Length: 285
Image (tube, rainbow, N blue to C red; front, top):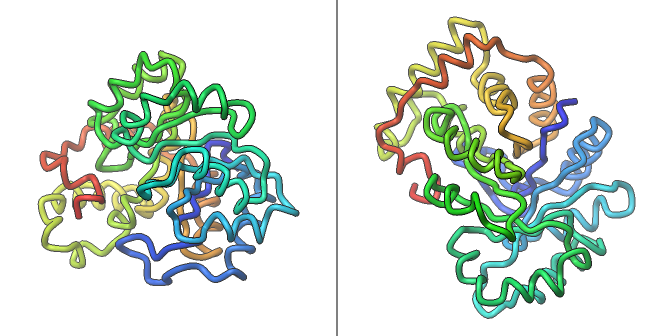
């Protein structure tokens, strides 16, 4: 199995994704997904305090059987301090320590700066091993290049939010020794949708989506296969986060991960420009 794969768990606790027709995953399927992932060598989980009851589901269904390395995020709910948030996550996950705890946004990290030393002194190597942050823009990525506290950076990367958009900033981070994880490989399902079903508000992305469809069709590839291999192929990316709505989707993703795509095809994707870059952030939808 491709060692870069990280299993996202937001669907364990929330209805998530523009193309999600299944809703929140039932416990029986969560257990199947966790079992499939672990046995295939996918031993990293990405979760968060604010993903509904996802952390509790992970603790209930996997803590005794599997030794996943877990990345979680501090709660963004008002009035909850970092230590209370982290300890609640550890209790729900039924684990003593996280591999990585992340701030859910660059803004949240900035707001935590006054007590970042406290977090490091009281938390690092006790409650978590590494500190990270989830970001959206290249400006935020660039501000983290020389940051002494942040080890792991997570950002979007996909067929639209691509090498053309991101590579310069990500290479700077990589050269600075940061670990880079990418999310939104299918752009919350948008890339997998039938073009006729793309919402009107996202119509400026239609032309780029059409180019991607043409490249995939000409090379007899599914969009999902192309999207996953595109992210996995970049040597400046250490981990690629995938979310699934059902066990069958995980099986399909695992199959795609084992079938590389030629550099000629990947290079064609690299050059697809998107002018309406604000639409690449699902939080604006």
